[in-house]
Length: 328
Image 1 (cartoon, rainbow, N blue to C red):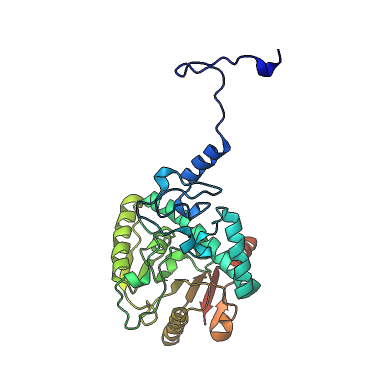
Image 2 (cartoon, helix red, strand yellow):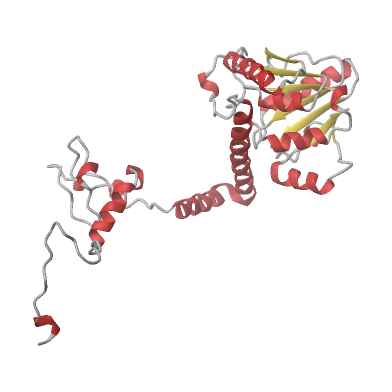
């Protein structure tokens, strides 16, 4: 008797035997669809007015059906009903092509470098916060803060990357014990902690937001309890473009956005006026400094060339635009 004519033994339902039967392709797709969030669903129009699934390549599992009664698919626009690509690589390539068309190659590369710097800030910032039990990694919007400046000038708070700041401190031609470190726009105080670790003579932080200054003071207290660092640190609510700088030799730190910021220009002019009134060593650390016309607009700046680790300095300058300037 051919094999298709033989009787097939049927096992009782409560005693499974042999290998389990593989799930059908529809069941596998349904389970995969259930694990995806709503924004990555293969089809957004999956229900009808009666709440039943619409036939298509993928049906919506019952627990993913909306509680409210949606509009019928034919009442929605084609843009809303078209499949959403769950592939992040394809989405990123689309953003890259659009940026190249709208902004060109140079600005697109600048945007990519700024995005990499932001990711590095987040990774290094979380490690720094976990080490000392502080909070400096959260993105804070300027509109949500109470500012002391008459005219609202500034940007959203984004913590600086710890690696480029430490590298820039190492490029200074004078020892940290002889300098006063001033952070323009200190926020919750991440850079102030890095400066305190470097053993500067004094560390000063200025910010226009009351909430950020209070958070920075609490973080500094926690930092001192965990690390035992006794470097004098003070935070003040002040406009960095108008405040008076300390009398001795100073280092000014500024985390600038990828394009020209009017606050940066006002701070540099204020530092130049202070230098003319009281000549002394004034250095400026600029992180994320992508402006190639900085020396043309501010001729009183001269770049401090590294005396050691020139290869590392060149890599930092190319990747993160870390520069140390001297005010003449």
